[in-house]
Length: 399
Ligand SMILES: *Cc1c(COP(=O)(O)O)cnc(C)c1O
Image (tube, rainbow, N blue to C red):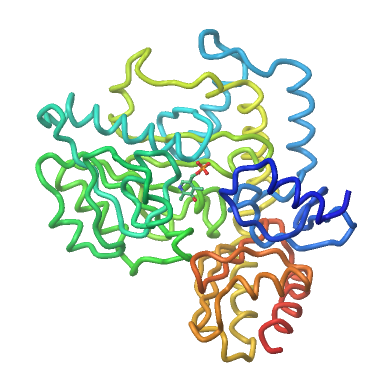
């Protein structure tokens, strides 16, 4: 079948909730993917940072195959021999004390919301039904009704109400606004350390450190959504390390299983997790042995193959190279590690057009909002591959 036929078939039978580039991929290895015609591309999106370890990582694949031949799903009605080691290894990796495993990022966010609300009622002493959670403008935390209810993106939100009450929105990066929004009923502050979907927006230096202090002073649980920024993406295991803090709750997902399997987790080093009792939360697939086995190997290779350090060094190298491109089109280049945002001037006519030109040049990127292109290749990328990418990016932007 040809590309056009796949596209036609997709459009005929599928819900149109995405607007993908017109490339039909059939194979991947490391930083590279191939389309059905055999053309090779560098993947500079990494499935929104879910394939940090590179496509079809051989060790993760071996675990996936081996575990799928042994045991895949028990439900949590019974125990399985992968769950406990997964807990321990994830706690040791992230310096956490408790884990709650679930499937998608949005479910991890929902889980955190439930847990902090219950903590608010049972431990903090918030009156029934009054718990408030503070979130930031331009956040992205997923697609459930509760989550889109506190989104400031009209497309994400419009026509999907009525929404869950109990959320307050403050500007991202503004510590005064956070302090002002806190009331005796505030139970949590949910924030991304760097806003990925908003266009790789980095808060002012010290913001997270101050947010941590403000939360502590007011007995509010600081919940960091590291679903995109975590697991090496920003050149640290968790982006919170850039500010030398530890969140009370941390959400991870995406790269937790290296792109092989949907798994996410809520991590806690706070009394908050202990409020959950049997029967109050769960998921049929959450903590299944296939997910746990795959995640164990996916975590192990991040460390074993020095992907965090590589992300730090290669991110620096990539950003420096991008800065040197001689063009009037680029307004700003920003990022940490291999989470890089290139903001174009409004006069450039939109990022989509450049994503399509990059596609022709053999680089796959996705625009975020109208004028921003995110470059987030797998963390296994090397210098030579970055030089290859820069050469092609340069041609697109200086043409
Ligand atoms: C992707 C993402 C989510 C949602 O994850 P899903 O697995 O798509 O539900 C939540 N928060 C952040 C910061 C994300 O980047």
